[in-house]
Amino acid sequence: MEQEIAQVWQKVLGRDVINASDNFFDLGGTSIQIIDAHAQLASLLPKGSEVIELFRHPTISSLASFVEDNPKPNLGSEKTRRRAEKQLSARRRFRS
Image (cartoon, rainbow, N blue to C red; front, side):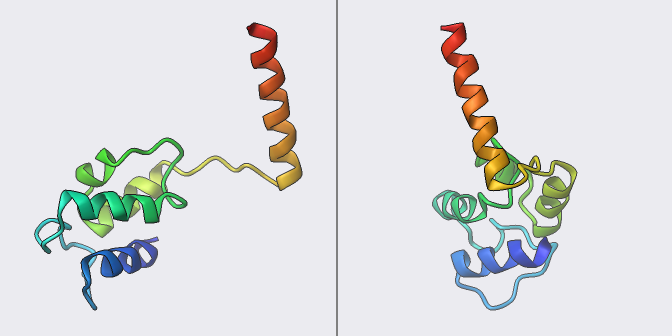
């Protein structure tokens, strides 16, 4: 997890090496760059995670711990996911 986060940070910050304990903002990162990093990390972050989580966890190690402590739900196969979406949609229509 730390390696994947580090790769995004290196790209966003234009750095070759970043240590797991380095603070994003101490490395010169800006709020605009953290929004970019959030977008690139979206597939790794727990569902519904907002940009504020990157402000709360400004180091690679702290962000990796947050992700590992709050894993994304396992959506299973594509077929299972589509079936679940259809069921949810039907429930919403029924409640309306």
